[in-house]
Image 1 (cartoon, protein in one colour):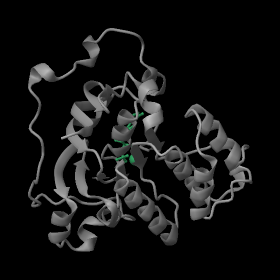
Image 2 (image 1 turned 30 degrees about the vertical axis):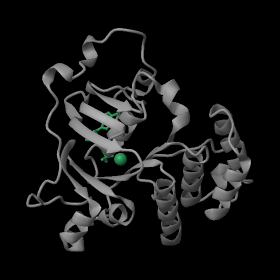
Image 3 (image 1 turned 120 degrees about the horizontal axis):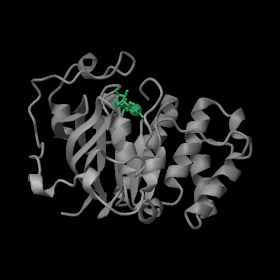
Length: 280
Ligand SMILES: Nc1ncnc2c1ncn2[C@@H]1O[C@H](COP(=O)(O)OP(=O)(O)O)[C@@H](O)[C@H]1O
Ligand SMILES: [Mg+2]
């Protein structure tokens, strides 16, 4: 089976803190993978590793057959990335901002940008600083989807969107999947991943707890408050859930030891400094 994403022992430490701990996850093409975990579980760190923005401490993230940390250039056009803390240049209009990125992607069909903006009722002619939080998030969504990438990597994408726009976004994700694209979507809200994902990977304290086909997760009939703690500090993942398919660890000889690698300095090193304070 074709795997768009393969991680092997993917590990990221910040000083003493292990944000992502030995992640082994395969994502086949044409699925929506919901990456569910409470605040601080390591979702954003995983997403940044997959997008090649930070380097792993150990292990590897292979995306379309390329090491994400080394081949940002090869992957950029094929990936649509929405960061968890999306912040666009406030003095540009939406059009100016998206044109800039369209240029970086080597050109984007303008009508596609227009259609996406209309769909989300977004005015692209005003400066981004005058937009509401939700409307700024929509700019990020348009940026992620506008070049029709093969893989979408989306970190808590519905942050700030009202329920109507959340539904519109979920429709867009389903259409994207139906068109054969792959979507990696992180969220701390169970109802969101259940609404759009085909498979749900549950993360806690940097570790993969279990991987579920979404139908199996629905069939467990867990009470909503048990898992869906969107406003109360994230889902609690119960111990009694059976594991569906957690991969066995790779053979030790196949783990890439980043410290022993040689070669040119990696792009991701620029964005790879410890943060001064607090989780993202
Ligand atoms: N740049 C960083 N420097 C130091 N600690 C970090 C950094 N990024 C993340 N962390 C820590 O790693 C853990 C996972 O964070 P994160 O990936 O943001 O989780 P999530 O997105 O699931 O809320 C947290 O304990 C967080 O404080
Ligand atoms: Mg996060």
